[in-house]
Picture (tube, rainbow, N blue to C red):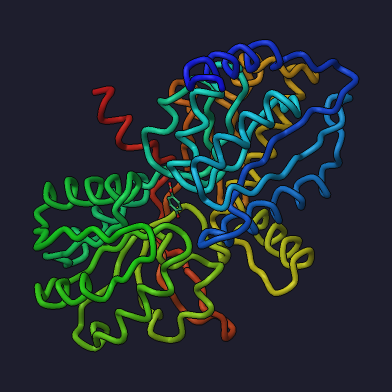
Length: 392
Ligand code: PHB
């Protein structure tokens, strides 16, 4: 039996040797790792639908190279992500890794991306620190602080004088809590309680009760895409809607994929986020129409655009390198790239490899009978505020 250290060394040297061994005639392989089963399946489904749509629209050949996407299901389990990432690099000779539905899944692959010099394209996860964990990480999704900080600034200016924060107890939730609290307090707001709910099998009821007892003007919520529906159900069960406690949050709470099932109690919820199905641009209207056509019964949410734009980033980088898959050359090609996404104008910050994008303030409304996040204010070209503050 190999010791853990020997095994780690074998994998490390295999990663170094194998990466880049593919020839120009071979397809460019993209290892797409996503939760396709388990509680975060919606993220996996949204992103794969968008990746397929992008390839359908742009073909499966770029810069003379065929592009092959190899989809793997990690079920949201970091151990699986790590194993799958190793296998994709060493055995499948993937030139890029992409996907990463949750922060712990993105983090666990970072050392492998560094060792093998394989770009890791973050299409979903949102903790600020992720891009700092490897020079090969580039993000097309979002940072949670982008939305949380904008929400705080808007709340403080709009007569929300007291708030309770309720976040999922893991890295992006901690980011949400601090990125909301600091600017909110600086603008004169008062946080009456800071509540953290476990990630696994969350029961929000006791936390919502504590929030209700504190009687704030608003409850600020961060939950990752998925459990928002449970929050809503338990919020109504506690009568918090009737008690006049406004619900605000990052747009993960009113995820367009699950929002239609929330019912009228969701009408009026205000959130800050980078994408809404209802974003009123021509590019988005075309995107939503094509997405719905290819995926009956679904509508695209914010995760989907992370996948769609991630494919655009990869295609455009391959064009720039003339089809070469050298990891450093690909990442260099990605730095500073800007384009019009269904969400609006976006850019890859050349210094941080993180996304710069508009953050919109939105209100849930019924539009033609369907619940939608309707944008009514825009904060333009928002950089990740955590990294921006560190640089000062
Ligand atoms: C994350 O784990 O980084 C994450 C996942 C889903 C979200 C937001 C953040 O909606």
